[in-house]
Image (cartoon, rainbow, N blue to C red; front, side, top):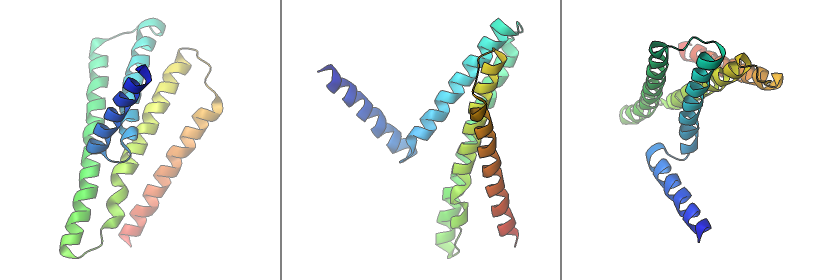
Length: 154
């Protein structure tokens, strides 16, 4: 009976997430989770390791994370809006479909890297391949974005 309740709760969360964020809702939930973990590790680092806790710095961090969500929302709005507008006027604007996803991926990688940096500063041993792998992933996303920008200019 308990397993059935857990399945029902998970199913409810998945249904709501899919209704709001689409098929890849778990990426948005993952980003939210990374926001919370990054804030928590930053607070722990500041309070217990650096001894420089500041409510103003913490508030600034929360505000930045809210702004990240706004930028992600704008990127998806531009993506979906321009594709729809292109269909209305008969112009193929499908290349903008990745704006939102690239934005989300960039911020997700930045959050994970920030968490790892906080952990390293708290003297937690983080595997070097993980830090390097995220740096390489960020470079690949940036390079892909740059190539697409150059193709648009041509």
